Image (cartoon, rainbow, N blue to C red; front, side, top):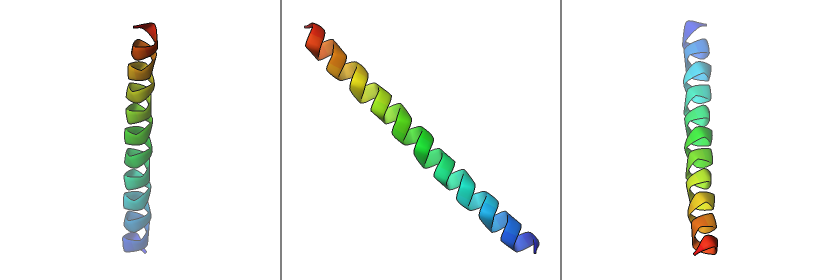
Length: 39
């Protein structure tokens, strides 16, 4: 039972990390594109 809970927790942690990384990368890309528009 503990192994199942640990596996689910690990999976959620990985998914959360991917989502945060993707949103951070997306924010960086949008900021760069906005700077290019200003120039």
